Every structure is written in C-alpha cells, then in structure tokens.
Length: 267
Image (cartoon, rainbow, N blue to C red):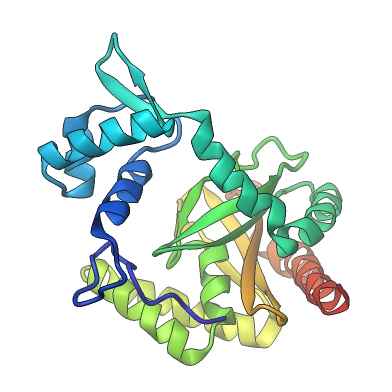
C-alpha cells in the first residue's frame, strides 16, 4: 500500500497545477457534516472548514443545485442529500476486503458475543466500513461511517502496525504534530501495540480511546492491490477483560484476517 501523502490535515498542496482548489473546497464542505447532528448553517460550516463565509455560501448553493445538499428552509441550514450516500455506497460495494470479511465477521461476533468492526484510514482517523453487533448488550454500538482516532484505538493501531516503516513514520509524524501535548503517552501506547502485533498478530486498546471500552485489533492486506483493512473486537470494560481479548477474541480475530488474506490471493 502506498500512503497518500496529501491532505492529511486538509491543507492545500502548493505549486500543483493539477490541483483544483474549488473542487477541494466543495468536498471539504461535505466533510463538515457529522453523523447524528442534523442540519448546520453556513456560519458553522465556515468555522469547520476555515473557509470565508462568502466562499461557503457559493459552494453550498452549488452543492444544493447539484443535488448533494438539502436546504431546510425553516432552519436556514443544510444537510447532505441521499445523493451523497451513492458515492460512499459505490466504495462499499466494490471493496473486495469488505465483501470477503463480512461473513467471517458475523461468525466471529456469534462465537465471542462481542461486536466486530472493519475500517480503513481517513486522514488521522479510522473509518468503519462494516460492523457486526455481538450478543453482549454492553457492546459499544458504533455504525458504519463512525470515526475512531488512529493513535488510541485498537483498530487504528493495528492499521499502523501493518504499514511499512516509512508509511507509519509519515503518519505518526502528523499525529505528533497534531497532538503534541499528548504525544509522549500516545507514543508509549503505539510502541506497546507494535510489540504485541509483532509477537501475537494483534494489539490492544484498554480504555485508551474511551475509558469504558476495551478492544483488540488486527489487520489484513490485499497483496494484489496493497489495500489494508483493519479490524477490532471489543466491548465494555466492565465485562471484557484483557484475558478474554488475549486468549479468545484476539487469536480468532487474527485467524479472520489471515483467512481474508488467503482469499484475496485466490480471488
């Protein structure tokens, strides 16, 4: 996999004649909306994108005319339209790693009673692209489209561990700059994850992303494309112990990832 070294933080590349700034700004508008929050207005969009309000006003008007935004007249605010979903669904429907993983994730969730999720990187976060709920009611209920931080979540750490040294160092340099105050603790957690991943094929996040959540993570690579998918399995810290993750969920999750890699080689 070759890490896309552009726009990790949304910054516009300099001196790139192929880069269309207006298109990039329009896509940043779409990224400003958050799950479960409802419509937002141009002022809030301007704050989130660091774009002038006049620019935001023109872009939201354009996106509205193109059918990618819906305008709620009574609120004076915008929200994404169903057309946006079609863009994401095309990715999901064509993602070989996801299609191969889904039945195995269902089986694993039934065996361990915990939620299982699959994700890929979006900037300095992991984006869930498939989720399966476990029987345990304490399982954290995150849906497809949820974001988790790459540095503190089990799924994010597993993704980092699967990268080459140069790719991982590139991303971690951005993490260090973005979270300078927290970097010493983040670095310790990532180093623990790398040791576990090298020794066992999985890594843990024990309350480091959310204090109430324990999880184990691993990753798979499609060698034909270089694409990497990461997985996690976990639940409430009150019921999911480190022993359960290390002796049961972790090895099974590693088996799932290895099975996916084998199937990628056969397909």
